[in-house]
Length: 417
Ligand code: EPZ
Image (cartoon, rainbow, N blue to C red; front, side, top):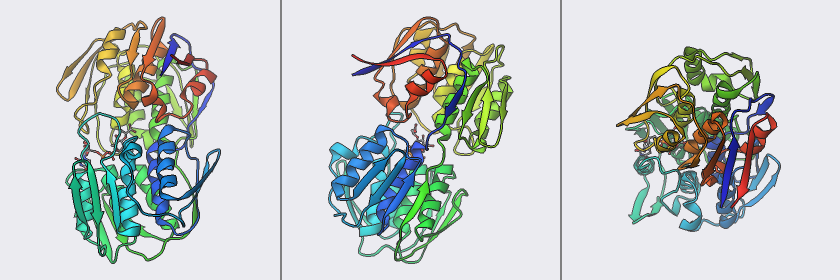
């Protein structure tokens, strides 16, 4: 088992380069199965979620090679077989094999996906979408068999805006007969990245990034080269690190527009930052004003930055509030922030953060990916040593986080225990 140890109080100076987006890459890798030819994906982050998807691809018979950030996938020898739960439960995004295999072979057999325990996270909207395309869904416990004689385009209205369901229905519909309309679709940048990838392979998708996506089915998808967009959540996490402990810290390889909701809140708090085309600079600011934040679907304030921003809100002069509207169980970091000396109360789907608090390092636990990121951020500011356990959650979604922070002056290390 591993733990992360941080000596707090060190300013962060220099440059952090943002990697490819986890939540885009984990969709692009399964989607590559839809092609009948070689696919090249670049800017793939080196994180354990990608290793898990790789394991599923290889299990299905795809030939996968990786050179640095470049991944080449040849799925011409794939055999469509039931995916064991042992590998699909390693991550949430394994559910993208449902859309990809159904779209290509009109049949898929796999189990309910894994992923962070931040809520019930059902997949009913994915399954409803597949049924609207003419598929039959047979559920036996946590195992699903989804099968169709033919997939026909249909009109799908998503009851809840869902990133995963929007992408999965796109994957199943690109080779369906006729036109599919997804209404109330999610608009996240990762969806645009996936739609662009599919279009480059020969699909006909329009409206990605808006709430109505239109897909005209095609028979064949060819080869392509595609780059993963920069990770806006990783970027947001380091921007917050800069607001906490930065000394003219530079965050490069970003798309500022993708984190505009965060930057707006930071400016409202009084954080000094300057944005440029593909980078920004930021410094530690004192006397920050408290703010009220509500998480929303894109382009609103991202739920994945809710826990990281809480670390900063503990330093504000006064009472901030944070309302979580996407997940019902995403405040598991609060108990540990209070253990470090914060003053946070939970009131249903809202937390009230009474600052400023002087944090003191202690032993804490990463309960999920973004909760872990929050504890690293607080550890950077806390007096003394903070020890974070169950760090596998963090390593699943942040490429080289220890090396990146160390390179700009953080006293941080990963240790086997
Ligand atoms: C994606 O999850 C991301 N994960 C999440 O990031 C992110 O929090 C989320 O989108 C929202 O932005 C990946 O891309 C792998 P949803 P996803 O479907 O697709 C409910 C991280 O930290 N819902 O948009 O699973 C659901 O329970 C992770 O990187 C249904 O009710 O999220 C949630 O309350 C965590 N039925 C809401 O919709 C469904 O069939 C939004 O979920 C699907 C979703």
